[in-house]
Image (cartoon, rainbow, N blue to C red; front, side, top):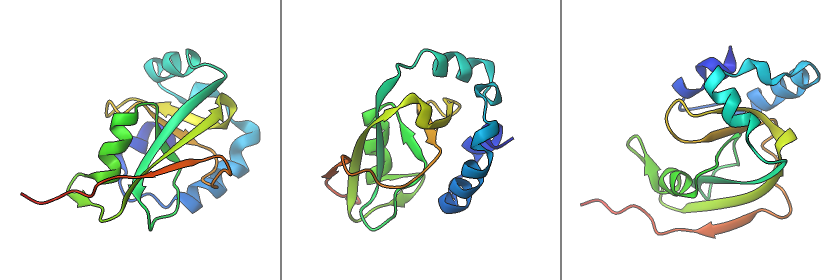
Length: 132
């Protein structure tokens, strides 16, 4: 149910979902994804690069993108949410770290089981959004 409804969320309580994902991970199956999302998930390599854009003051979340440009857009701002200190985090992960994939919003989104920072995360500051 979470995979089917995920794209409808904006203010996601990541810590709550990470706890729930940890509890359910033993029973996880890629069959939770839609047919289209599952075929894209199946085509992913065993190790891949993912990107997350957000404000530097926020804790990392579960939602990442396979598309760098999508993450940059989220870092600067999205859906009328603008960030004063945008950053782009890049991470190499194993496919087994992905709870599910969704492309419902055309964001190539991967949702990870955990939102803990990795020692090898690469974080880059980006220019902030300017009005007008």
